[in-house]
Image (cartoon, rainbow over all chains, first blue to last red; front, top):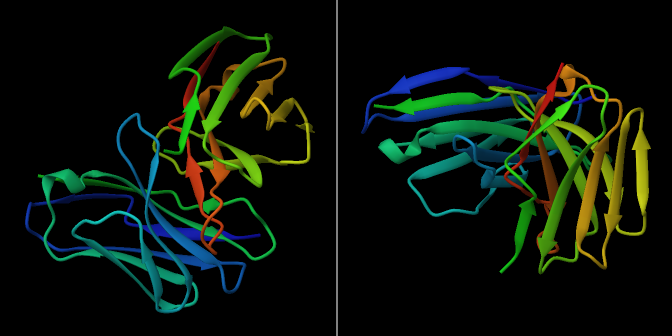
Length: 112
Length: 114
């Protein structure tokens, strides 16, 4: 079965600082990978998805970017964080034969 | 525009009763619908998938129905327990794109009272 490792669990960063969140996947190859953001009490907003190495699709224009340097590694980055970037960030994967998503444990980002 | 709505933000029920959560959607023709459970501070966990040609699916105390005419799914938890307290999210696969993207509702927070 698929497992996602996502870190760090919590992060407090000042406005204008860079960001790098990473997730890695085990138990499947060539997965579809996703980054979601969840505001408090809100649903999941899809930020980026990737169907393969180096292939990134952006759903929401913003100061975030994503990269997939390896098949099972997905990175969310920012050069300069904004206060509005605060939220709960979730990495998810979807294997080729299973339609459900497996989520990581999430990163709680607070920009101060 | 496409929209997914879950009937209420919060639902309180007594232990042992059946909890029924609603997911309505507009302007979609989803191939399938999924339900997830999310505990505070954690990522969602997949529970059930129901396809457009299926009316009902069961898993232990869980039952999901899918009415593509009404554009609605109902999620039932029978003999509810306090441990069932969580936020439940429905999700639809959008019709476009090759990545089988899911669009999620905002969730219903269920509290089962002892």
